[in-house]
Image (tube, rainbow, N blue to C red; front, side, top):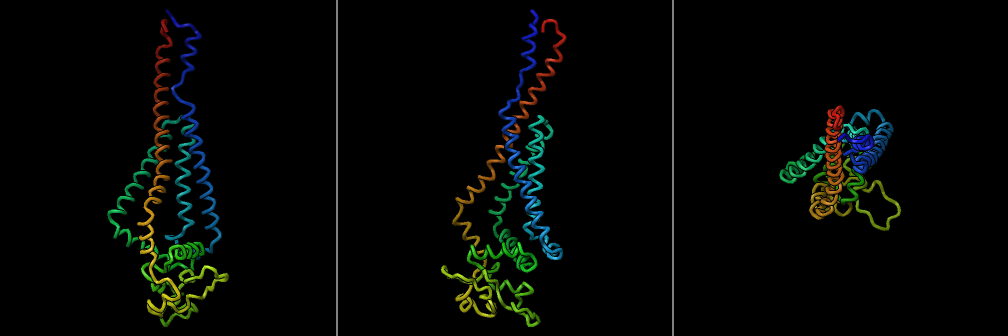
Length: 282
């Protein structure tokens, strides 16, 4: 007995694609899409506000460039997720899922390699900090970032306060005619809690002093040792942060795979209906 027109219509209207999964994935990506555009906007604005010479001098350590790069990458990935879920496009959803999977695996590999090869990671961090010290006066954003780190971790330089001699303004050589010769930034100084006015010249001539004498006025320990100690004492916090980054990625991968499977099932159903539409018993 052939199906009635109403029964055939109900069969055509049936869909494997869940609106809840589809729109949850869409709004999930839309949120991070907006965040990525804000990141790119802030990065571009910070980049344009710098002098051209300063911008070209320290490309490898520019926080604005890092913000732009991360924002653009997030924008492209979430664009695939948004359009792919809204249009039920398998190719875009697969690209979105693959990108998230690769990023998750790279983060996992970086964490494992950083733990296994901690000495080499320490050397790389030291290289980055020393490069930042060299360009301290060339980039205001970088300068503020270094000052913030030195104040927060109560440290000075990468290994010791004498690392600041790598900077052309703080260098202790006799050829250096700068007023900051043999000094360190004010962020290295020991400050009293009730100090109302910060003396920005408190690091004057500190590199010419030995550790005992300089330790009365500034932090003499390098930031790498302080950073390592902070990491060891905040493992649970770091684990929570890593989990906070991993959960959205895993949720995105899971939702995209569920939606891809539902779309594939829907395509199979449509092909089946087309093949049997001419069947008199359908």
